[in-house]
Length: 265
Length: 307
Image (cartoon, rainbow over all chains, first blue to last red):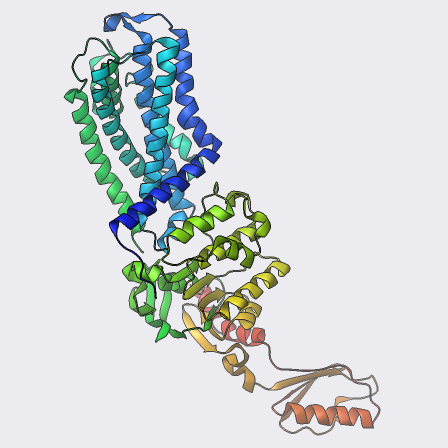
């Protein structure tokens, strides 16, 4: 009998392979690739084109593209980390892949890690694509040192939405209806979170609701990096703390859900 | 050591008792088949032994390890082919086998497996584009990829056409000859008869009979049946006297049930030749596994119906 290797480095190696296989699958699924990469880029081009050269007076004559580029980056985090994770993990449960994996020596966490790692690669590509479109086409810009704040906000936003997305898979009974259900959860939040248009001047109660949800601090934090009125490194605890809190909530919910999946009846 | 040991296993879901005190052992290298109608509890037992479910009471061990203990070393040495399970539809047959192979401490080469399950032409086809039968063959290959010591096959040919079933059987048969222990569930008697060294018939959560297929339910000791049709001008009363036999007639069709099959057949054919009587549709048969199975499962039917 050959013993199964159980070292951490072996398991990390397995996880890296799972990332590769997930990536291969992702790029062959045109619909997933479209919604994760083309969809946000398309919005940026449309909005950027419509408002080209215009400025946002309520934000001290901020160029519209410097509002839209970070806003749509927040939207991309939502689509890729939350929507896709919810769909992937709902499918895992309902189509029997989980059941198959459970009878193999692959650690369940290596499978989860592969799916999450693949999602994060797609997110990085999507953010790079938004920069690559917004900067040369419409003149969006981030001062160098504020990239620190931008990346910190993106990282926490990705953590919050990925963990929440995996936990939300619990709500998706049938993956074929999942896309609609996930949109019902996320779309109202998108409208009140500084993604499509500025919330400045909206009634106080809507502001309160939107600040209590995770998308608003993500969009605000990213927009601060593009907004000349904010200086320094762009680290804004006003936005990072709520995102960290949502990450904690996401981790708790996700762990509970993943445990319930691994449990034997 | 026995490859699989199951003793006094019970499993209930709320008030429903799916498995009610099942015990059996499977020796290493043996092909063991759990045979029974749908809903008899076969899949529940299979899932307990595979480690998907935990028994309400009783003890289970596979290769000396409790499958409910989530032991990675055990999962490295078993292969499970479920009735239906998911695949990454975007990956090709070759990639699926390569990916699964990485999970085990030893693995069989994808090309070898593809050859074994006759998917050569589909190596680069995405798993999501396979037909139902090809999908099942990929499932079988995925169950084998870790070169398991114990292979679980849950209704491996359900939904196959007769030709595909024969092909799957011969694949499984050749695997059995490599010394693997195989645990099979099925509701097809011919499948059990063709593949299994030993069969246990499960009805309503219990094992009602077990043994080699040819001896199941005392089948090898059951009386021989001789059937034939008499010509119009001969009546049953004219037949020779037959020892330890019962004769019944339905019109001209006669059924002789006897524990002395050879003697009775000899007496009847000798009598017919001597008297130049043409016995048509003459046949001598043992009760089939199907006869035994139906007899075993029928007794439980009223109970089943009251559930």
